[in-house]
Length: 200
Image 1 (cartoon, rainbow, N blue to C red):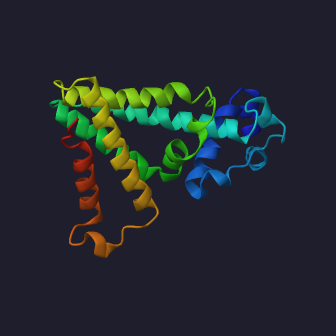
Image 2: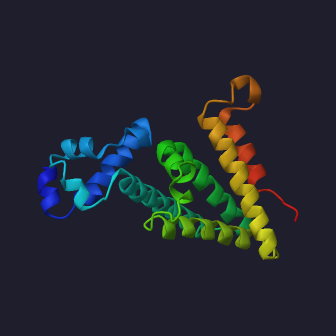
């Protein structure tokens, strides 16, 4: 039972896992500490021993998401091939993550959590590492690039990828807009553009 898990100190992880499921089913607005406590068989007060409020739980969920994405970036950087191949693997990892876990992706990148002053402390290290891993992938792919070019490329990749995903997940790309390409081919084309050459 979940109640015994709580007594073993696992309630925090159970709450994060439960919130992750709810976010993928109905977005961050579907998360309720009261409902999670009920579903886990603990008192309504129990979650507050681990998370100050709902936002604190959402920040922990977003941090878990960045940890998962960072693991995928690290695996991409460890793949065989040259630097361009590694960057492409990182790009595919990002698009794959956003496609498989759209609710979590939106919480990580489209919520206001990282815009707060200050942002939730739990979120800063993994989010910061995510961006630094992107820089690393670009440096490996373009070893001749100076610091300015690396950051220009990162901003262009970030903007192109997130802009496309926001529109795509909102259903704004209708078949007539990309046929005779398939949807997968459209994603490949956008990813290629995001990873392509840039000028400073």
